[in-house]
Image 1 (spheres, rainbow, N blue to C red):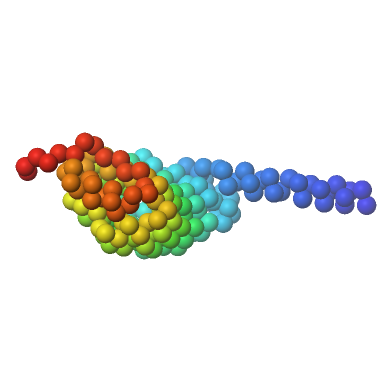
Image 2 (tube, rainbow, N blue to C red):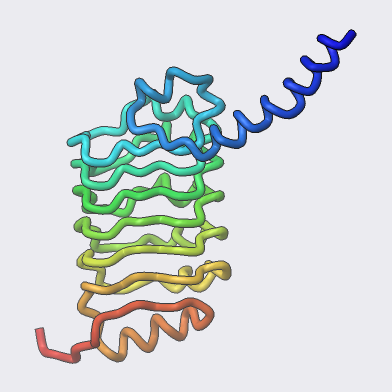
Length: 193
């Protein structure tokens, strides 16, 4: 009877601690992440791996909340990324994106999206569908303007637009679209191009 009581308390007290610590574990390779049950992988960092495509295996981590893919050579995202519906943080900075990946607009749980230092010229209207977005980092992309739908992002706290040559007038228009958010710009230039 005493052994059963001890086992009961071990199961009740220690196993939950393992699952809590597992949510904090940052896996740095797909191979490492597959050493545990796929539904217990919450954070994955595949930065600086010279990837040109996102491996399909990533979509098996259905409880993934944070995915770091910065400093790779990605230029597009596959549709299997849509399996990651619990994703809250996605870092795609310093890649080779010329277009805003349309799959991002379907990731409704996204809170933080980092796309800085790519070559994105147009932000699509669908950006307004990412209703939980709090941080949007677009620094140093050759973006001409932002769509009106950016004003649908009512939870947006910060948008980083530094390194983008918006005129002072364009900056005021953008600020008026999202007055509740902190908008980071470089000093505006009304220079002739």
